[in-house]
Image 1 (cartoon, rainbow, N blue to C red):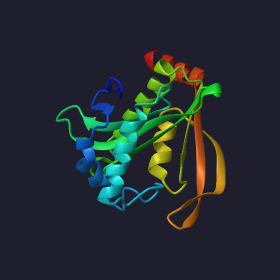
Image 2: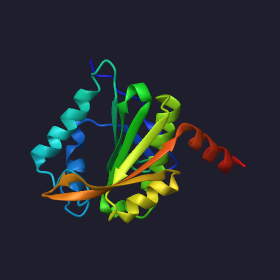
Image 3: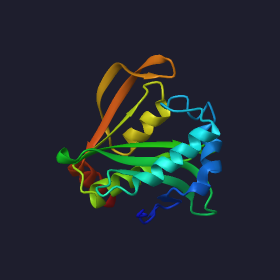
Length: 190
């Protein structure tokens, strides 16, 4: 039996669980070489995209769920513009990683920052995590700016850490602790 998690809402976005009928909207960005340039997947074939969606839907069936993937949709017209996820990487340490991807027409408009903040809120408040981290290619300056904007700190630089698309790539590690997130929230209220 598959359990669907209630949608997460931000000012302009709804983050909801994927459904099989999302495949064409997902494929539109996942097959774009510009969008997936820094990512470990893609450009996707139609089969890759359909398999991705089936995997995300299957993961909802796990008794102790550790992976939450969401379709990123606009509140205004429900258009699917990307995806994001939070994955518990170490339950004993209450640690998880986040990731996100948006169609290029929606870059530079603050959507990534908005959805990433919501993932942190979800992780710390609903999953009761202690630490959330993210990694990105150091050449992906836009992603690094988002991670800094949401309060994450750079913790490391890993040389030739991942073999992606035929080459070894460096990776930058960012993280935030629950107490730091609470502090940031308190400052924004003051």
